Amino acid sequence: MRTSLLAGLAVIAIALGCGAEHGVVEVYWQFEDATLDRIYPLGYRTTTCSFLDRSGAKFDIRVQLTLAHYTDACAEDHTPSSCHVVEPQRFDCARARGTITDVPPSTADASAIDSDPGYLMIVEPVIVPADGEAFVPASTCIGRPGPRVRRVRPGRIADLEVHEFVVHALDPDALGDLARVDLDACQSGESDTGTDTGTDSTTDSTDTGTDSTT
Image 1 (cartoon, rainbow, N blue to C red):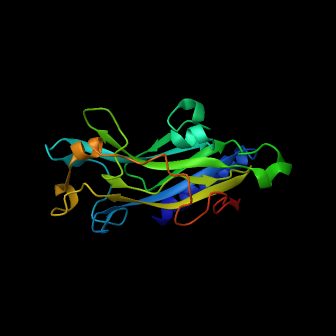
Image 2 (cartoon, rainbow, N blue to C red):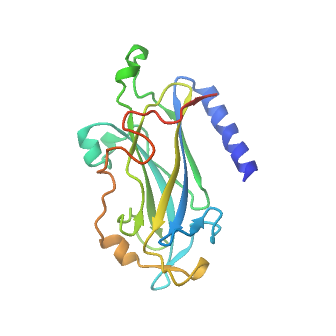
């Protein structure tokens, strides 16, 4: 874990050094089951790859980070490409950390930092079936925090900290590779992802997060 952390910091340092006019956004995550036992990382699974649904079909749970412009329209629906600051990044199911580099500052005017609206930063789980289309599950299937708003500044890291995902649809009577998920419920439930632009449990809507210089 220490080795991967050092490698990640080295990558970020290189990225910042190569494009000091841009910023970096970083996020960590963890998955828990409905009883809040840790699934991954440092839990009873070594990845979030190759889960089984009730029919025995395999699927991965990945994490996607989307940076969107902070407008009413994008707060309502962040999926149109016109909302995206950069291309959304979907990270591997064997990772617990993701980074987007070369992010344009959320204001180009250094004298207007205090009025910088920041970006909407949406971290959401994505179910990727082995045979089928990927989809964002309903929050009743996998619970997660709402979007956070952070400012991105040149040569700095916007740290979204740790996002907790709770897999409500995981069979509570089986652990590890034996646990199964009701994918039908994940697809048919109501999801509130992308509509909560208020404060979250750690920051308010104008906080720039744990920005650090390197």
